[in-house]
Image (tube, rainbow, N blue to C red):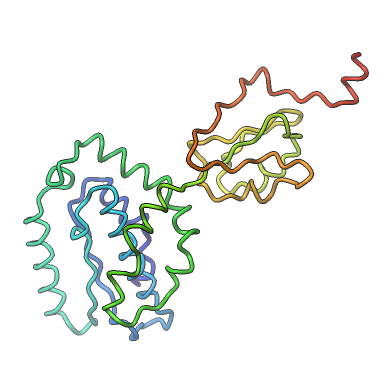
Length: 238
């Protein structure tokens, strides 16, 4: 399989399943067999994920990427042997870092929830082709990653402004919006991937979707209070 197909989700899944280390072997940069140069993307992904590992308290040396050709069996064997020795020296995942198993599970789950957001936010950088190894360490900085996690936006539909037009619900890529005709829409915060599609899709004349950073999201309206009463009907009732 081309290393360009290795997604951050694959690496995260391995660690979430208790794997102590992940090794990625790739073609030499500039020597892609498929002319897609996906190994550059994978290199950037690894550099980013290492910083994410540091952020959640895991040793980034649990993730290795090494370049080699199909004819360099000796390089592959040496690299894998070195990797195994390295991981054994570090110790079991989480335990060696002093992280409680449940806490580690929670941290990894938090990263998983933000993966789509991270990919969108860092899309331009992930597509960059780094040619100088001296650039690797500083490509993603600690402050940049800390800020990325700190400034994660949440989205909330203001019940007073929502007109139940269902535009946001139709556009949501993960069906995170609970909607029904004539009812205030609700964003399921557990499903939401923070992509901001609903914020962009909501008609400007309504402006019902609010972007929230650094503050808790207000609780959703109870289901029996979500019915929208149109002004015309209010007059009829009066």
